Amino acid sequence: MEKTAQAVAEWMVQEIKFTGTLHQEAAIEYVKSNFGEEFVFVNENGNTSLSKDVKKAFRKLHRGQIAWDRDAFMWAWT
Image 1: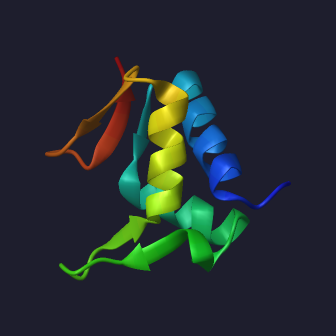
Image 2 (image 1 turned 90 degrees about the vertical axis):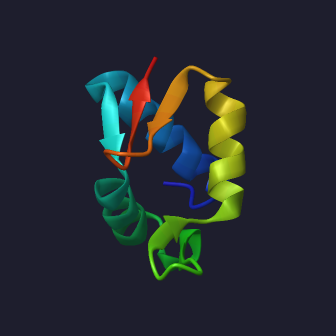
C-alpha cells in the first residue's frame, strides 16, 4: 500500500462510501496503524488530528459530497 497523504484520503473516501460514515477517532487509529504517524498530529487544543496534507487531498477528492459532523466528530456521505 502506498503511504502518501493522497492514499490516506483515498482510503477515507472509500471507507465513507462503503459504510456511510467515518468517525475521526477510528480514522486516526487506522491511519496511524496502516499509513504511519506522519499523517497525524496533536493540534493546539491537544486533540489528535489528521495532517493538513491529508485533509487537503480529502477535500479535493470528495468535492463536497462528504460532510463533517462537528457534534459527532465524524464524516458522512451527503
